[in-house]
Length: 181
Image 1 (cartoon, rainbow, N blue to C red):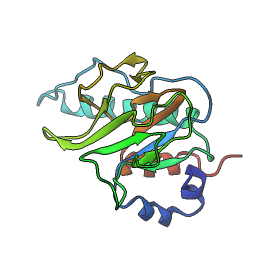
Image 2 (image 1 turned 135 degrees about the vertical axis):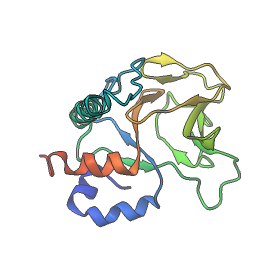
Image 3 (image 1 turned 180 degrees about the vertical axis):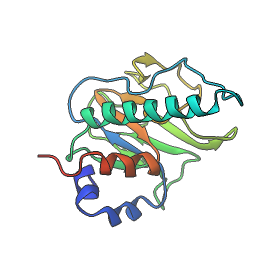
């Protein structure tokens, strides 16, 4: 099991993720919305510089919020299928046949799945009719409906909270403060 602390101590271990985007487990209980929703900025020729500056500030703010809710002990899980997977998508659940196995009694055997590169979007999540639901940024997802994930999104399965990160954000997250106690 790879943790954020492992990656901070040995950055070359990021290769163990196989180039995949990842889920980073929250350090404590509860969810924190890292990414602001509903704010779209369309760059224009006149305001390109200001738009870029605002985007950089938003990224720094999201990175700071994310670093506050994860710890060196946070597990980093690649969004990848097991070599022996029989599923079309990356699956998450309590069952040993899931690609991502999470030991949480509030998670169903097959709780959710992740669709990769569907409709030109890198990652989407779908609750597959779980007993306790899947929540995206504190909002319950409709079962059997794909929902696009954005970098920094908070996803809760049962009582387990993860944050969706790309390899780039994970590298930034590793370098924000370095090792923590």
